[in-house]
Structure formats: structure tokens, C-alpha cells
Image: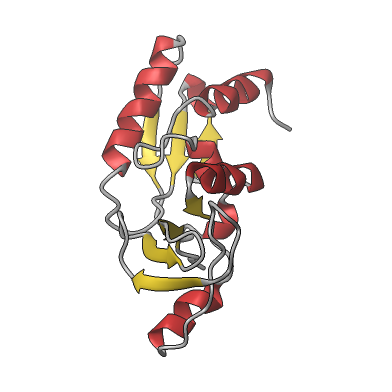
Length: 163
């Protein structure tokens, strides 16, 4: 059962943005794995979206700074197992992604089909069309692919489904 202190910390962590997608909090992204307040210490355990994610140092600093400015000294621990999956993203986070212009993860088969040169249409976050085409498996970051909508002609990132 979460304590009042745990609930306060979760609420504060909802205010820490992902540095690569600032409309999402680290809670939306699902990278916060646990809050440990045993022994009168606070430890926030986080998991990177992929191994070697360059944003993790910034996220750890942002967590520490934000909690400290709210009177909660803490340390941040990186947890690599189990590996992060897009299933950990909140549904609210996926809706925020779409509103921001990034197609949220849909189905892991999209990534697998691309490997075998079978294209799957990703829904355009701007006009909701599925008449889209993969431009590049690598978008603005390693966790995104670049698509183009063939109806509204706008390019957009697709957040790859990771399982």
C-alpha cells in the first residue's frame, strides 16, 4: 500500500518531463520502476527506454533537482532488467504523443514486418489516415522511425514498438 510520502513523490515525478519529448512526463513514459524510501532515504529506480539512451543522465539530474527543490533528497538508480517496453507507457502518454505529432507505438509486428520489407501503414497523427509510407527506420531519435502521410503529405515520427 503506497504511503502518503510515496504518493507525494509519484505526483512530483509526474512534473519531470522527458527531455526528448517534453510533453511527456517520465511517468507517462513508464521509466520510473520503483520508489524506495526505506532507511529514511529516497531512491528512485528508473529504466532506460533502450540501452545507451543519452537522456538518462539528464533525467536522473532532473529527478534529483526537482525532488530536492521540494524538500526530498534522493538518489537515482538505473535498473536495466527487465528491459523497458512500450507497454509501460501510459495510455495518457500515448494520447499526448499523438497530440504532439508523434504516432504512438501500435504493434510490434510493424517493426518486424519492416525487417522483411513488408510495410505496415502507421496512422498519421495529424489527419488519422493510414495511407502512410516509411521513409526511414531511423527518425529524430533511435526509438522513432520517420514516416510520411500520403494524404496530408506531412512527415511524422512513429515511436517504435519495443517489446
